[in-house]
Structures are given as structure tokens and as C-alpha cells.
Length: 331
Image (tube, rainbow, N blue to C red; front, top):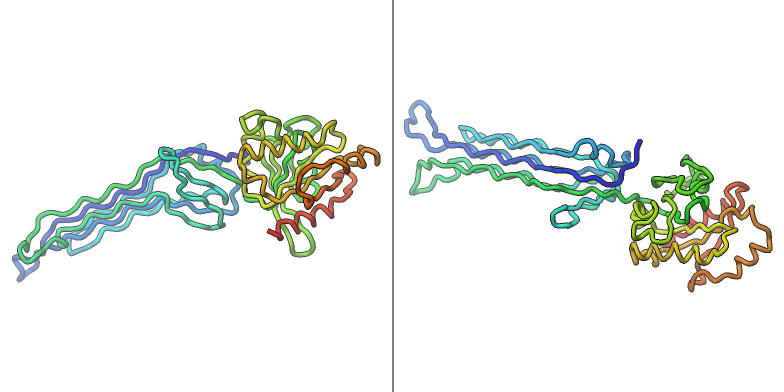
């Protein structure tokens, strides 16, 4: 299924039904009082977060959604039937914005959560509601209130515990394929990963957590360069970040600083997340090179773990899985 993480749609809740004007006409009651019923309420536009969905693809093909109008009131004080709601299923992690104002209407983070984003119009009152001691035969009723029409933006931010970030071709996709059942495309060229990948990592018999791998970042990604800028928001919700740096990079500290700088430009809160620095492809370097890397001071935080891993030989892979698990549970 194609991964789509943003869409714009038009929504319209239902109009309220009209109130009814009528009078009792029964045998023996020639001058009966008013008995016009109230109109039904218009249907709402409701969002439902569906944990089985992971893309907004459907909203690219169908752009207009309407709820049903409420039925008009009728005689004998009968209230009109309420209009049916229109329920739109979205992936967990979807943010809903009013395009005109930019206001965030909803943030669907909880599975099977429902949120009304456009209320249906209230039904108009029938003439039976307007009878008074001085006006026994009101001949008017209210029209139903109109529903809400608006254009909204849907923006998906993946919900994962750990986010993998790195320059292109550092081995993020290979790592996620080794530690989880995810099967991303893997090849020896830049930007093999074109969409985020999610994987479930299992540790022990009952414990598991989710990891997200986004396309490789390059310097200037937060301003729109490369592909990663399109997906930076998918690591905003993570509780921990794993920075992957190639062990044989000419300047591993600069690589890390480029990644950290782009993340903080996109969202300054990123710098407060827990971090792990991983040197990938460690099987391709000798012990002398490893010793050089160990001497580099990457951050001012002495508690930031640094690990040397190889997805090919599985070196330190199990330890990394447990380290990620421990980090997210320390939150």
C-alpha cells in the first residue's frame, strides 16, 4: 500500500431539519392547539483513529465528505429523525487542522478514539414550542441551523517509541530489517528509503516496542533539501532517537552534528530526547579505527550511550535492542 502522510479534504456536517407548523385536528377538538414537531439534528463529521491504518491514501482519491441532514419535524409533535454521522477512519497519529485558520482541531493519538470535527446543525423548533398564554395558535416555526462546511488538512505523524536517523546509506533500513519483521527496500545507493518504515522489536518473551526509520537526512534537510525533510515529523513523537553514523566516515563527529542540527532546526524540542549514538558497519573497520572513534567527544552529556554495531555480523545487536527498551522505559 502506498504511504501517504498528508491530505486536504472538504467536509460538511448535516443541516438541522426544519420545525413544523401544524394544529391538532381531532374529532371533538375543532380548535386544537399547535402540534408541530422539532426538526432532527444534522449528522456530525466524526474522525475515528484506526490502529489498522498506516496511510492517508484513501483521502487522496475522495476529497469531499458530507453528513446527512436532519429530517423535518411533523405533526402530532413528532421530532424529525437525526441525520447520520459521517465517520472518517484515519491512522493513529493523525493531526487535523483547519486550513483557513491553521488551528489544530484534533490530534488522534489514542487507538479507536473518536473526535467530532464538525457539528451538525440543530433542528428548528416546531410551532408547538411557541404557544404562550397570549398566543395560543402560533403559526411559525424555526428553520434548522446549517451545518459546518470547512476544508481541513490531515497530517500523519507516525507513533513510534524509537526513531532512527542518519545520513543516506548508513544502514538504517538494514538495521530495522534485522531487529524486526519489517522488510524495507535495501540497496547500495542513496535514498533507497523513500518512505518511513515501522517495525516492532521484541525483547524477552512479552516485551515489545516500535521503531521508525525515516529516509536519510542531509545538511539543509530542515529547509527542504533531500528527501528526509518530508518525514522529519515522523520522529517528533518518539521517546528516544538512535543516531546512525558509518564507522568509516571521514568525519563522524560532523555527521552527528549535521543530524542534530537539522533535527533541532525542525523542532528545538528534539535536543531533549534520549539519544543513542550507533556506529554502523563496524565489521568494515579495524580495532585502530574503533579506538579513534572512542576518543571523540560527541555530546556534552556523558550519559549518552555510544555503541558499535554490525547488522551483518549481528555484533551488539541484542545489546542495542535492550538498551533501546531500557531508555524508553526510563521516560
